[in-house]
Length: 144
Image (cartoon, rainbow, N blue to C red; front, side, top):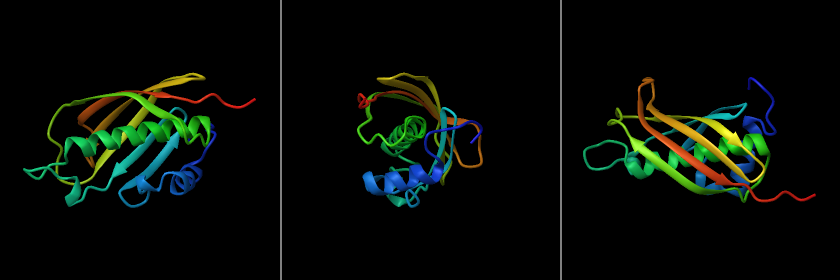
């Protein structure tokens, strides 16, 4: 972490394991880093993520982008389970190489009610993007 976040990598992992076990952090997705307005997440690509032709499917890449954005937001605002996606657009730029995909998220705006971010996806070991996503999350009102 380059600057302070409300949740560390370990705290995000613990929160997701308890509140959102479907994400399978540490198995399907590996959280590599959280930082100030950012997160890095790896999709451990397996047979279930592939489409005909042997490349990672669009729905798997979409999920990676969405989860990475969610994690970047959680790290900044703290354990708010009900932050939800309100919009996510993805542009598929090129066919990924076989193997894992890595998502790098950067939050562009973090307000009281909305967060907006962008996510670049690339094949592990290759910095050339295979997809670019932008998304908006709704943040529920906080008590007090």
